[in-house]
Image (cartoon, rainbow, N blue to C red; front, side):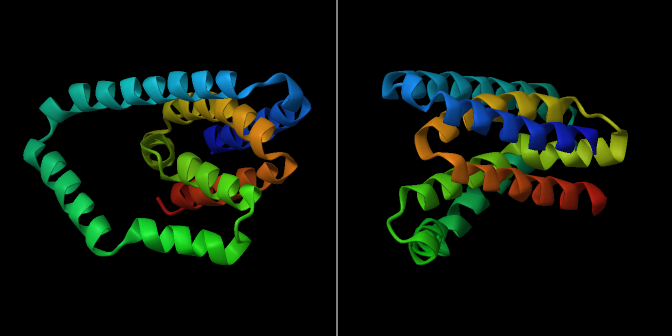
Length: 168
């Protein structure tokens, strides 16, 4: 659970730094940080696939799961439903869009799902610490872009990861 607390604190601290540096972080730098973090997340994901897929008893299940997930998500119009939910909750507010984007990024990423499971089952917090570092930098950008309202994402993440941890 310590990794989840670290991630919670990282989002709070990053958002505060981002809000404080709001004028000093230009759009160009935000885009550069998001690109760097996207590459870091991609590398972490690829490393996990390369290291763990050969050990799997059912390696084809990975491909089948991705294909079925893509088909079901498209069939159920998840993207449209999520966007409609955002419109209902916050209208055209940029803060609502920022909270929705950050919540999806913080909570639905592989590290946020696998991290609490590994922490609960094996006592291994490394994935959550890695996730916290990525979320720290990301939350700086979100804080600079959307302001103090982004602090609400930290308790959302805490409930998500904490619930996942406690359910194991």
